[in-house]
Length: 212
Image (cartoon, rainbow, N blue to C red; front, side, top):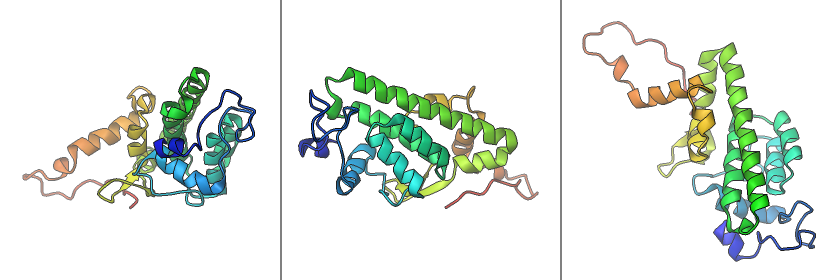
């Protein structure tokens, strides 16, 4: 966001009814500027952009968040593809917006962004819980599904769990709220050690496939 702020794109004036801002006190972004704003907010691990989120409702969801149209964002989220990924991405986006220089001195706006982030985090929690009750293997697969628009510095596609970690979604990762997330973290720590015991000759147990 610092680059966008330096260019004057994201400054919130005392009068939110100014010609460059909407009634919600946030800047009006043209489509050609949204790309740079997203990169500033989401960081270098984000490789996507408008038109690359996975469907029109996904793109509209991101646009609604940037415009601070929270109810509209909820509407688009209910219709979007990959709702787990998008809920966690929106949570991260709201938190980064709350930390940006654009909202300095606007505690009301900052608190609003953080409250919106919390709501989307709980949407992700409830969605994960719903899938877990139906099929734990599918739930684990969904959590560890890799996305090409999120890549770390080594070029490895990141997962929903990785996005949750970046967004500090502690409620989502809490064992009481999301056991399947706790299980996924355990598997990451243990790696393949439990499948490579030297005295074992039987085939390794079935593991949930991961999307690459």
